[in-house]
Image 1 (cartoon, one colour):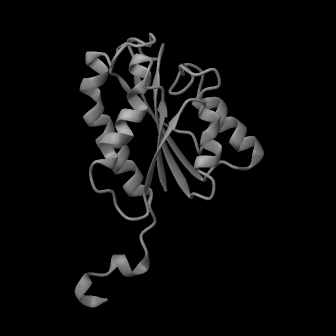
Image 2 (cartoon, one colour):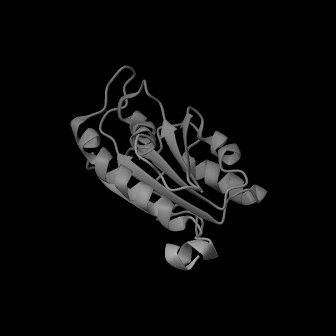
Length: 165
């Protein structure tokens, strides 16, 4: 299982995905969960999740709900991201949705792919995170971390209490 943050530190709220994985990385994550950053082109996701049973991807979006700081979740492993939903309003030339569909076409999409996105307010070069996005990051990080931990398979030994192993 891998958690991947997508974004650009130099473009305001586009850094949200990267900031979320940095928050997650600063706290202990269950064994079996890797955390990584994908600055720049989201097509690099295809290599980043290669060989993984699942991935949780975090990105910024624009034009989703219209409310900066709003968080969306979509199970992209089951179905393509719908038009106007999470990832379709990506701030990248080729967005997360396109990377997912290319991976699906090539047979390189993990069985479970969950996408979280936060609606951004500003994406100008040199801008910092907007207040609504900054305020949403702790809740987003908690949701992403919990999702990833829930998707990690539990070995048979971990199901038994420690005193019965």
